[in-house]
Length: 165
Image 1 (cartoon, rainbow, N blue to C red):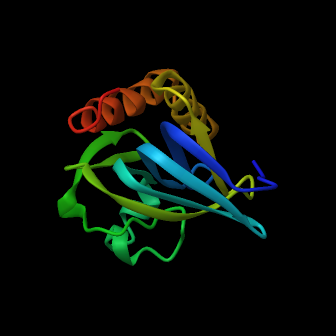
Image 2: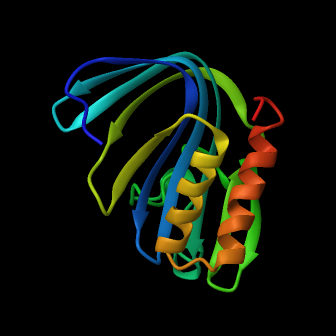
């Protein structure tokens, strides 16, 4: 997605992720009210004063074995600004799904990068669109249909604790 001019959105969801195919995904789902988007070269600035957000990741077994905390990971596709203690872990045969334990309401300022296949974002008007985006992201990275649905279900349940879905 590339914007030619500033856009204001009344409400919606943003699915933002960095990925390294089959190795790791690090992302965030943001449920927002009144967001402003401004193009800045190859990036888009996303700002809102009223958002609920939850961060998530998938780490393949080799990433889990490197011994680094999520906040110490050198790859953007594995980096989360928190420690393992702030994440719930759901094991899969290939690695683990990590989901922020306590989603938060916060002011959000993000520089969104659309640079497939490693960086991407999707703006969605409703949860079903965001769910489809999450499931597609998961399947592109080797998740089975069941695992992709599980990721979306867990994010929806956790985010739904603080934001109507």
